Length: 140
Image (cartoon, rainbow, N blue to C red; front, side, top):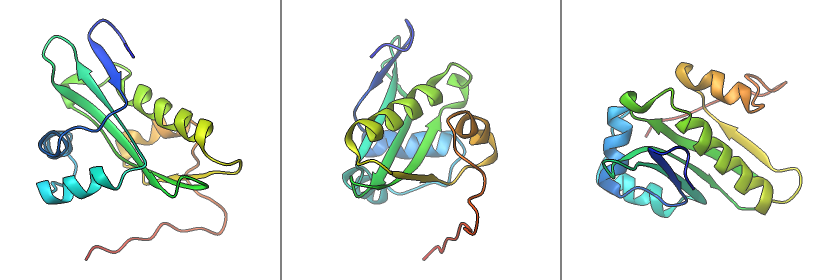
């Protein structure tokens, strides 16, 4: 689906190489190609944005979850030179629309928001804090 004359939104994952490059170039923690392959295979939904003039994949986002009621938005990334073009908004909108269309009523959508992405997530109705809940993580 065209976003503009220069960008196309595709319901598809980037290649593992593209996934790793997008994460790293967008300032996210680098991941190995093995991790990228597993992430792609384990995703419930994946969207990417391709820059039409160059063919380069310049943005991505995915959802992991059970397909019924629990969904987690992950790996939202836009290359710095393509930011402020509405690409992250297009990816997040597509992911949320897919959840709305395919999930049961009462779907629970979570994410971890780094500072640069917080305005986008707030715009889409995410809240910084749920009463009685605390985000937790463990790196192994």
